[in-house]
Image 1 (cartoon, rainbow, N blue to C red):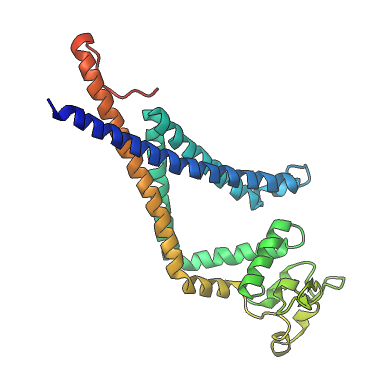
Image 2: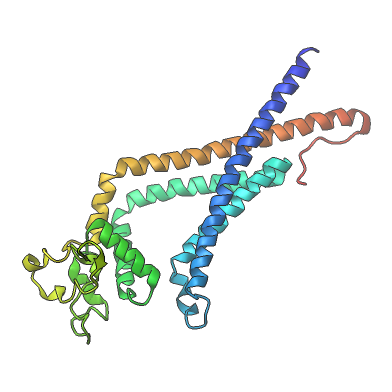
Length: 285
């Protein structure tokens, strides 16, 4: 008789703690998702990607990835927020099932990526070559390509001569950019440390490797990416484990909260059943 109030109090405190953890964490990720979604939409509208002339190529726009990730993250975490606050069994079940699916998908993707490293390298090569082809036409791809080449000190996919694939940098193209490479390939693209020299890569493809190495980076970015991953494998693994751990903790909290809600409602309905004959169950409302 004297243990029931204490047990009920402990159960209530546990429920409140679980609700607070689930609500606060999902609220944080909802804000992150909405920010990502807003960034993607801003990028699409800022580039006028919905105009008739650009609709054909909108499927390859990198900003769509931000829109998709932001939409999925915000909707999923909003479901968890509302489900925790309202103690809604349907929303909590939906949140738990989708989160479990995402965790399983991430683990499966990691296994597949490790098993199919050669195919992934080919996909990266194809993607980078496509970005190089559209270098002058797509500002997003141009920005990403420049950041990769500058950050990893590389040029092209396999080597600097890959820029022959671009219609402007091809040696048969008219204009000053023929047989050239982008300034992000240059060893020192800045003049006096302040001004970006857009002509530093002019005619670089005409040079032999010995002469070109003092002007541009000779190595391709695929090799640089592989070396970067090997050098930072520990950090990458740690971040992946932490992210996966956070998702598992949220899944455990949501499942435990759902079980407590069902147990509390079952107990309450059993007490009512003694007088009204109602059946104990957790309804979706």
